[in-house]
Amino acid sequence: MNQGSANKLLETRLLLVEDFPDDQRLMALLLTRAGAEVILECNGEGALEQFLLSQTNGKVFDGILMDLQMPGMNGIEATKRLRSRGFEGPIVAITAHGDRDTESEWRAAGCTSYLAKPFKAQEFVEIVTQALEYSPVAS
Image (cartoon, rainbow, N blue to C red):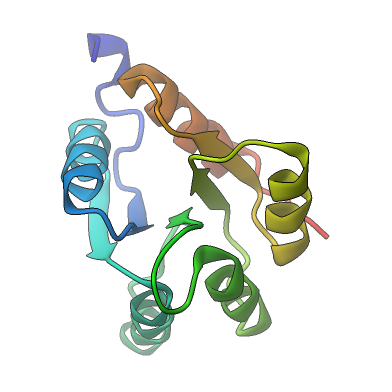
């Protein structure tokens, strides 16, 4: 990661929902190096719990990064439920499948953008930064 990425996400609170521990560690490292506070969850159920907790304790999330393929409640269902419970911030879909069918599915669920795996570190931070700057909820 180059120095241009440092502090791009300063004072940003993000929820990272990813079931694969190595991907969790890598993405959390990249986000924290860019200045973000990162809360980790490994499935859709945990994402909903964290969102509800954030509403209770006043520590809202500026954005959510959501893996689409997870055991239990997948990212599509979790996104739908987050939107139905009032989360209006950006949700970045993270997927290993970037085909047209997948795109229509994540857009319909309410994701604002996506990132295909594998990705480059700088690309990851840039996509998250752009999603936070421009985050109309997909309809």
